[in-house]
Image (cartoon, rainbow, N blue to C red; front, side):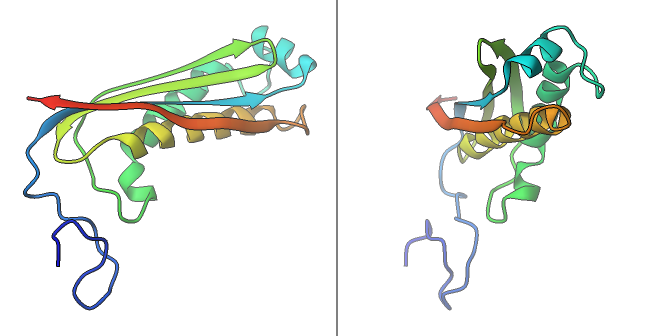
Length: 150
């Protein structure tokens, strides 16, 4: 049985064994969007939401989420992240979130990038839910992942 398997010899779920993979410099980028009503966009733009600065809080939430990914996703490896960048920007019809995560390690950082985007979008949702009942999160996806020798 391959060491890179998701079940052990008894068929039980287990983390993939990455111990024989060489450490590499890895980067993953993800993006997502939350559609907002025009009135909500104005409140966010003018920093008039009761819970505070929506874009900044969403960015911080995304950073925190990336650091906690292995605690949230059961079979995800804990990683020592080198850099976490989360940007939330107001667009014409909503908020776009982009994350970029990097580390040097034996496995990639895709889950961290996607988790950062999802939690940042959920934070926008939470901060705006009192005034916007029609919000919709969409277009959440991995944009790229790369690895290179250390």
